[in-house]
Length: 273
Length: 286
Image (cartoon, rainbow over all chains, first blue to last red; front, side, top):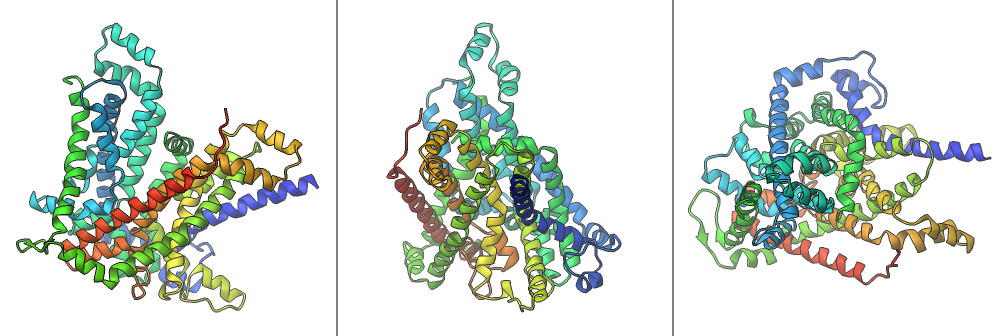
């Protein structure tokens, strides 16, 4: 009886897991079938032979290799900027005394309530004004200097670190930069990883802003070109699915590699509130 | 101040130039008529006046509200259920936890494409399965009754596991002694859930609801890819309406006014949620 309940429990968990995995599998199956094969076979049947023609078309004729490069570049710059400038700002808010600190921090918090779409038109206007539309600058500039959300998360964490360590370092004559690099960063590693993951996923998945601010194909990121491909080749599901895999697979690998950190970091971002 | 300045300055410039200034600009633009090209033309409250008479704006708000209602309750209940399932000391719980969080990382644009395939009326998984049992499935994304729930379901699929993590973290802070005491008093498992777990999870529940509702009010990517706001205007949510007003009709003033309306609606809804939760009974456990 007990063994039966045990099996039923795990069968139930596996069934739920299948719901979460199925779309990935269907995309994988479809992306490796030719169009004729795709429409002739069931969506849930694996491809007979791994047909790579879709990927060859997408990556080379449709220039997805370039879009992949654009996305990677933009995401890397955005993540590096958000984390570096975020760590320094969070450190100052958490551990330094300076006039106006609390008022400034309140300002950062207030900006958390502004929906993205509110700043969309003004940001676009600004980018046009400075002739930056259709450049890498335009895609990253609004986000690269730090995100108030991750600054808030890191500040909460840094404040919870034992203050004696910082006091001792100051007594020993450590400069603030040394304290930052030698003490804060090693001790704050979990939350810095959290901030990195949040920035990376945001950068990789960002769609609406690059959609608005770029209009030439050479500047397109993966999300924008996938949407464009889907609307112009809506019946060529084999190509469209292959294109979507190009954006999904890197994040999937990222997830599998850093799975433990990601699960913990999501929880850190909730508990700190 | 001199020591703090270099630490703060980059992010401060970012916050001022790319968040504070834009909010000011959007306020100003909402009083102008402008198409990005010709000189802006001051029109006072005209944009707001036309907005209140604009059927499309209210239809979009209504659609957004339905989207939120299709999405949030289901998503929250599933997330709670998954957390209850996985909140036990048994083998492989970590594996299933990771498996359920997996969709959180998926690029919404790419996943919307894949779900479009799953719900394709002719070749999609759902209708192929239905035809296997002799049912002729509907054109899910081509019908005004089913398109919005399907788009909402994609969001539920993506974030249910992610929210489960917050509930799991919350459940793990509940002292096990409470459950033991309740079990001794003869409380059923369901009673223990409603009388111990739920009340003690209410801070987590508030956090999850507030962030999800704010996010849901701003849905865009899945709508853009799966339905382009259609069929008709059945999935034209408010964010999509703002996008097309600004970047397809080039009516910058109206788009600014509508985005301020959305800002207001989100603030009110968030405030209401905080009020509801403040009035709930919570236990002090120490």
